[in-house]
Image (cartoon, rainbow, N blue to C red; front, side, top):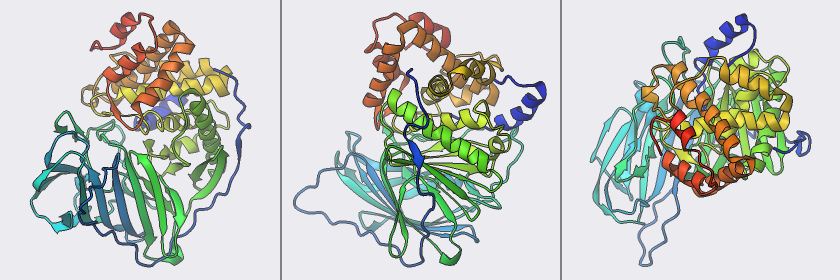
Length: 496
């Protein structure tokens, strides 16, 4: 995976244990031009309320996905968040429902989540059970297919300190706060996917991601208790300053994440009509600009190779922790990648920024079960680094294979669940790096034209859905008649 001096490898392996990421010529300067770089400040007045719409005689067609409206007030210094959340949930399962399962991830931290009230269609309910991250609600009557439920949940968050422990023992913490940053990730209750008659909510693990998300629309109305000291905010949605607060909206998204800090520096580039913004700390200006450049270049390359980027903004944030993680139109990069940036594109900061950018296709547009089939997004994200380098820095493709992929001599079957990975390194060697080798061998076998036609078709067919390995191979077979069965047998324990 890495191909520098032994000392460098010993230094970087410590940080990379916590890193969980998941052919035409290209001119980086062709479309990237400077854009405005400041986040408007919120002000302190009441947020809008959401009143459930009573039933009418004429049925309203069900929307294509759920909508989350989060009226949110943050006390930055007290590390508390007060939320009045409304979920408009259409029953798109194809069957009638008498229960709902909602994930509340902050409840995994003692004392972090305090539930105020729950109502369904304007009627308070107490017919629920709440254990760990799982809230089961028994509905008073069956919800028919295409009917829409209005769920209101009022709650407060007391954010935990995101202490960075030994990465050999536990994964780095993101949700919570550090001395200079507040991070809201998986911070709101959401209805988990309903697949083949079951609600999908896996248990967390020591590495990898366990959550599965439907696509949804988000409206976050955000204010801070002290407008005079409002921090700079990086968020999944586009900010729209209102008279009394700031509204962020994003459609057809898997998540909504935000980071806030009074110390953030911000730089932006335009890629077409997409604003890519880099948030970083003082003394990391060069690295912050380099991460921005790599991400903007990757947006352009992947838009050409895979299909259009789906949103109008993309925020990359220097995390005050040793981890990288993707969210909708938003991702974190480890502070140590910034600290070790060497001024060239041959480094972790560049290829991890590219990796996380690619998750806007392989996670955001096409969802998958990240716990049971993590390779479906992570192998493609790892290989997308290669696609970036061949287009932007073709002289570094060989270096990338040696340094990024082959240093750890990856082995194992690609299609392992996170629970069977036998440790972080064996897991990433298999799902990420063996996955990259599988895709390279597949591309060589079927040829570039069929390979990229497949990926573009995969994006079209998987758009907004939760796909499986079977979907991957079905769509692949629709785009090539070349036999690749021996390659599948080489890399996969299951035959698809």
